[in-house]
Each structure stands twice: as C-alpha cells, then as structure tokens.
Length: 542
Image 1 (cartoon, rainbow, N blue to C red):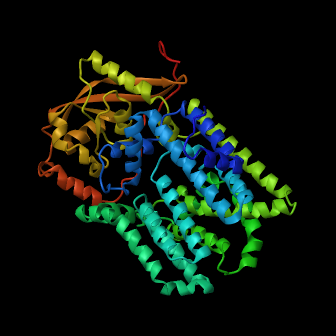
Image 2: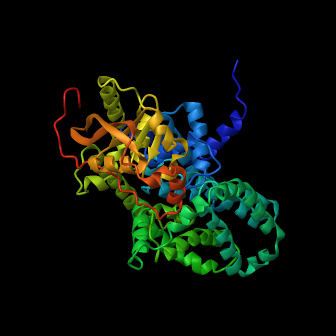
Image 3: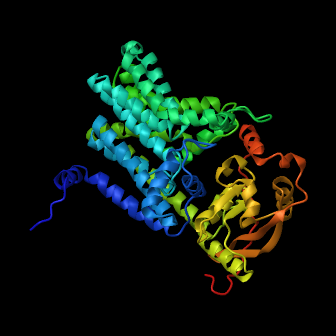
C-alpha cells in the first residue's frame, strides 16, 4: 500500500520539468545553511526580529511587512538564531524561484536557467541570502507585480491590473521603494507609442486604488505618528552640509557593480544593446522588463547626485529584471552557437564571487584586511553566543538577576543581547529614542536594567545619566575571544536609580524627546567598537 500525498504528481512533474532550478536551489540551501553555522545572523535581521516582538501597522524607519513575516516564522520555529537563519534562506530561495519562474514564463526555460546562473554569481544573491531585511519581501512583491503586468500585456484582461495593484500594495507594506514600480509603468506608457492608450484605461487607475487600499493601514499609522516613517525616509534624500556633487551617485554605482557582478553587468549591456536597437520602442515583454528595470536605477542615480546617503542594494529590483533580459540574450547566443563569450563572462563572474566570499569569510575568522575595528562590520557576525554566556556568568557571579531591559547607545548592540541572553530582554536605544515604543524610559528605573558599551564608556555613562536621568553602577567587563583573536570587550553597568544629573528638559517627559528625535536629522550609524588587538585564548577558549 502506497501513501499518496495531495499534489504529489504535479510536484514531481514540476521538478522533472525544471531540474536546473531545483538542483541550484538545493545546492544553495545546503551551502549557505552550512555557512550560517559559523556566523551569527546579520545585525539588521536581529533588529527586525526585535521589532517583530511588538507587532504594529508601522515603524519609525520602515513599513511593517518584514516584522510581520519574522513574527510568523518565530511563532512556528521559536525565537533563536536558527529560526532567523531558516527564515532568511526560505525568503531568499523564494526570490530566486520566483525570478526563475517569471523568466521561464516570459523568455523560456533556457533563458531562466541562465538567469539563475547569473544571480548565483552575484555577491548579493549568494552570500546575501544569509540576511533577512526589508528588501526581501519587497523584491517578492515586485516580481509578483511584474508577473501580473506581463500577464496583462499578453492577454489584455483588465483584472491583471487589479492583481498588480494588490501585489504592489503588499510591496508598499514592505518598502517605500515599491512606489517606483508605478513610476516605471508610467514611464513605459509614456515612452512606448502603442501603450499610450493605457492612460485612458480605467483598470490602470482601479489597480492603483487597490494598491492604496492595501497600503492604507501604513498611511493611517503614519498619520497618527506625525508621519514619522515618511519623514525619516525623505530626509535620506536631503543633502547634509557641503556634500560633493555626485559623490553618493558614484559610491552607489561602484557599490552595485561589486555586489551584483561587474563582469556580468558588462557582458549583459553589450549583449542586450543589439536587441534594444532591434526592438526599439515596441510594445513587447522585452521592452517592458527593460524599462521597469532601468527606472529605479535611473531614479536613484539622479537623486543621489545631491543626496546624503547611498546603499548599493537599492539596485536589487533593477538587477533582477536586467538578469532576466541577460538570460534571454544568453539563450539566444547559446542556440546560435556563440558560446565562448558567455562561458568567459559566467566563469569570471563565478570565480570573482567565490574569491570575494572566501576573502570575507577568511577575514571574519581571522581579520587581516586594513579595516579599522570601528568600521569592520564582520566583527558583528561572530562570537555573540559566547559573549552572552560570559555576561550571564558575570551577572551570576555578582548576584545580579538577568535584565528585563538592555540599554545601549546604538541599537544593534542591545539587539544582540535581546536575542542571545537566555531570557531575551527588551531593548532601549539612546541613539534612536523613537524605537523605544516597547521600553518607556520610566520603566528602566523600575525594572532590572543593564547598560552595555564597548568603548568610551565613561563618556556614555555621563550621557545616560544626564540625558536619561539614570544612575549607573559598574558590574564588570567581559572579554570575548573567537578564533584566537579578541573580538570585543564589553563593560556592563546596572541601573540603580535616578541620576541627580538629569536636566529640566528631560523632566518634561521622554515622549516629547521621542517625537523630536523622529523629526530630527538622521544620526548615521557609527558602531562603538573597542579596537581589538590579537590576543591569546584564555582557558577553555578556542
């Protein structure tokens, strides 16, 4: 007697039809799940997990979708490093599978296979799959919206524009960048003569209304919180001081060439140029995907000419579409027997990606690159479980109970202890007081609260006592050695009462300070790191 599983035959048929997809996804999952065993979750992922413990219709820096998804994952798998790592792998595999499916539907399975091979040759879509950020839900929504738009282009049925609005709204609940999807639609309708009639299509506007309805809870939350999230994002585009014209645009361009594979981008541009000239401005899937990909890239490049902050991963949705088109060009050349250039580009891209990943992991294990400790993000990826164990041992030795709250100047430090201490306390940040919805200042004195810092602790003690009005008492210092090198040295303080240094401004209430912080200029993230020097391992340390 054989056990029959519903949908068993359709699933087997799909696997047989797309062996490349499932082979690549299986290898990807195995490799990066293994890599996760040697590093801690990315600080951004942990920060989003902290927010997921307090569900809301919005947060002060971004929409709520990433927190909602992480809440669902940790509800099923528990709040642990493993749960966050599994969640990161699942959503990144979903992005790769969705991109493959859309490329296969639009340009054929061979093109989709090349698209997948190209994405795996980029640092962002390979090593980046260990991270769960606000970008991942937005990318899924972007791919789904593009699928609906291409379905409308193929069938002419207006209901696909309503489906597009649904997915675009979900993308808006993930990241505000999703608004560029409709900007791309507008650019396409304007530039392509055969599509200009769409300005008179009521379904286009009904789809937009659907998107607004889906995102309306976020708009309502912002209206009740002084438009805090919108203000925060808009300030990123405001120049600070005397910025050099074009500096951030240049950093953005160089950055995405590195993390999205410069060799493949160069090959793709050269391979696509003849088809761009051949297609012209025809109403075709190729032209649609091309314009939808170029619009976000052009938008960010232009605003960063005078902007104040750049991040190369903003190019992610542009490069998803670009590699779909590059995969189609690769399939054409494969069928035509023109394969040498394609092999060279893919070979160099994968070799460079492997070299970059090996360099990063070698530096994580034993730092050797000339990066100052306070600017080395890899130091935040190792040794946190050991640090938490050391802090718990210190507290037990001093007969101090585990904290209800962990206070730090910069929020990533407190977030690490929220995840790794056995009782998973709440966090409080002085750098971003608007984040402290779940830790009112008044409760820090009434409950058991610790402050942790890594460097310049005397200065930060004064800041806490004068700004927050809390009196601190040193508990002790822990020193974490990982891989034979000292990674961090933390000073741990205990809140013992109100501080006489607290000024009159703070007596008026922390809520007002929270509101002021939301409207204030962005405080750039400058982690406080102790300048670690090589050290011999202590007893019992590897």
